[in-house]
Length: 285
Image 1: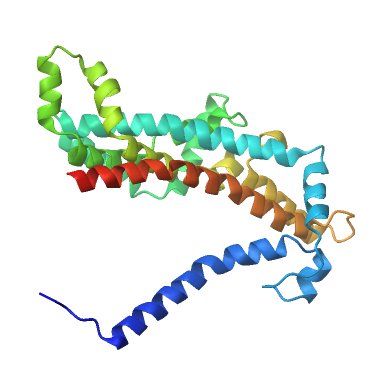
Image 2: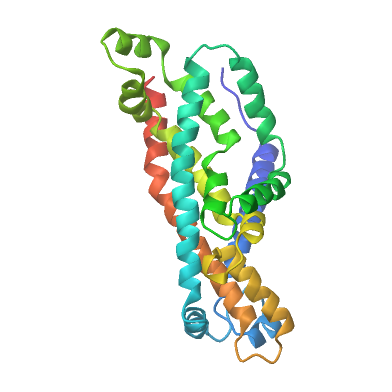
């Protein structure tokens, strides 16, 4: 049956997509433009267009301030987000596979606990974690930020849904009949068939950890262990109280925010091929 779309509907869709595009791109454009300005041009020039190019000066101030502590914060963010998301993805896929393909007493209760856990606001768990880690002496160390990222109930739920859709029960039974153990089945068969799911879970966990603020600000005390978001927040506070400082904190906060987006974009581009593979497999089915 042929269906025609009226011109009014097309115009409405075009206007909606244009507004969504502007809403999505405008903040990034504002960040790019204003990262090239000094504090005077930030106040006096058009916020959506360039003025005098001071990007080099802003970058120099960022990488020179406190002996290049910005790079230390970037390395800390990569450590917390990369290692935490990698371990968390493996744990989520293993737990999701167990929930989806193994029958055991209490499986429904386990699933209810997983669903109930990701409905609890993360900020409500941070203070109990702080008291626990303070008691065992982990506050102030990297483990205080890494350990909470190893377990994510929403990632477990997402992995379970992927396993139910992508891993046939007959395939697992055939592998068992051929003599493969459960660990070998998971590592050699299941993980290879869950690359798209793993990429999705990893990206969501990486972005959440990279942008996380409340957990690092609660657990980390020394500036050497801070993340980028925590360090940029500290610079922002200094820009509000240090009017007589020789450092242009407002400009370097904006330029630093632009630099902090680059790793997220790189991870997104690097993981694209896994989603294309998943779409192709779905089309073949």
